Amino acid sequence: MTAMRFEQTQYGFTYGAAEIERACSDEKKGWVMLILRTKKYPEGMQIYVTKTGKVRVFGKGQGEWKP
Image 1 (tube, one colour):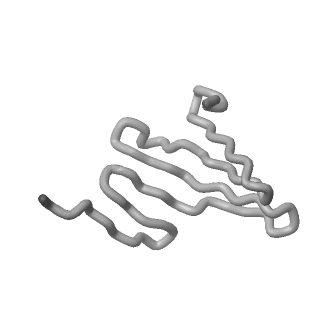
Image 2 (cartoon, rainbow, N blue to C red):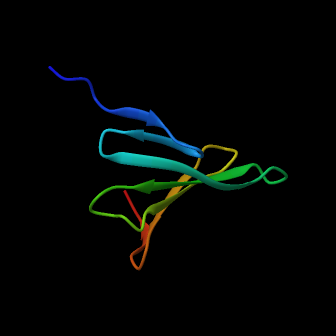
């Protein structure tokens, strides 16, 4: 069994086929935004997390992803 690739980057990390990058935040309102990129989604998906823990995911040209 081979180990899953893990590498820290300047603004995030790569884990397996996923690359996570911190994008921006608003300290006053308490939200953060991350970008998730894969080979199939090189433009990335935006992941917003509010201070209460609500998560919203947006794909380029696809709008919000609903569970």
